[in-house]
Amino acid sequence: MSRDAADLLGVLGGMGPLATVDFMRKLVDETPAAGDAEHVPVVVYSVPQVPDRPGAILRGGPSPLPAMAAGVRVLRAAGATRMAIACNTAHYWYEALAREAGVPIAHIVDAAYEELAAQCPAARRVGVIGTTGTIVAGFYQDRLAAHGLQAVLSTESDQNEYVLPAIAAVKRNDLPRAQALAVRACNGLNASGAQAIILACTELPVALDQDAGAVTVPCVDATRALARSCVRWWLGRAAAARP
Amino acid sequence: MSRDAADLLGVLGGMGPLATVDFMRKLVDETPAAGDAEHVPVVVYSVPQVPDRPGAILRGGPSPLPAMAAGVRVLRAAGATRMAIACNTAHYWYEALAREAGVPIAHIVDAAYEELAAQCPAARRVGVIGTTGTIVAGFYQDRLAAHGLQAVLSTESDQNEYVLPAIAAVKRNDLPRAQALAVRACNGLNASGAQAIILACTELPVALDQDAGAVTVPCVDATRALARSCVRWWLGRAAAARP
Image (tube, rainbow over all chains, first blue to last red; front, side):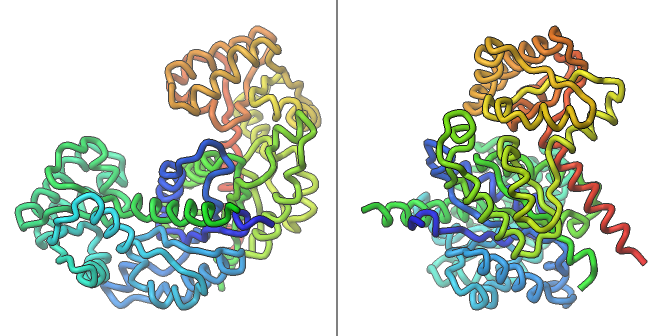
């Protein structure tokens, strides 16, 4: 078996199955492949029958960790040599999942940071926009701080009036409404001093893709950044395997 | 562990990774879910580093069967209790893969037949449109015959002038061109007596979705039919598990 064939990306799916499909689509989009065989080999575990993640973070509900750890063990047994988690909120349990994995798991915040550092290296104050579960979990703030960046968060009223309704509008496919709300949320972060914004949920990039020029600061789609990070790993492994 | 949690759909990915994403998207679309946890739990093995399938069928190239069988074994070890193959051409090796699986594998032709029987029960002559590999493989013709239906195929000139260029146009995202070519291919089958048409590749449904009214006979998207068949299985299992 060639080294290429032995490399395999394991993907732990998001809480919602569409987030997993979104990640897989972006993984294909971001791969510079001249043919099918150059795409990233991947095994995906997408089992949405897991205790609610925001419920566990926000309201002390049952932990989804045992079910997610079981998924990671399936990916490991399937031969995954690298993993990714196609869900922002699930990164609250990253360290425990990384211990279970036995192979490196790409971290979505590190992937977003790498995109930010490439696109706007001078930015020090970075807006983070996502579900309340992701924001309250705090790992974006902590991990960005480790890279020397300060997270700027939406005010509570912006979170409730713009961010959450924008996410809900994407889920019901009302994209013009979602876009208008998402732009207001981004402008709020900008007014609070954000020099760039990380879109830390699956829905907001869909809203803002409608008109990329409507937000005046650079925006990074965390899901796409994670996909790009996985593609860089794959291309690096393929290059290393060449004689 | 509840019976729901123990059921798991294993998906053997298509040769091209987009075909797999397309199937997963349709699986979500076709699930009548009020929340994330009602979606089909799924494990996907999508490893495109497999010998070319049309090459094996049309030109006697190396068989992709050992690599696909390895994928089926991964899905089995992951706990799949039912499987599906998100690729028309791969069904050429269905019987061998089914022996490897140890659990039932939904067959894409049976799924398409069920859709046809529901939509146009009187149809006896059914057009089949797909890649040359799928058509030459012959399993659509054989399996439809087992259901009492006669497959109607594109003429060689229609295959080369309309079908293959339509597929290529979808791959390069030229959808107006793809749609015009796909409509001509369907009209050709209609002129040959087809009372309904099965779209037996991933690309043609994308082309025809642009204007559903342009083809006058009913068309069945085989990928969507396979997804619907998997959803019926999931809903049936979930119902059976209720006390």
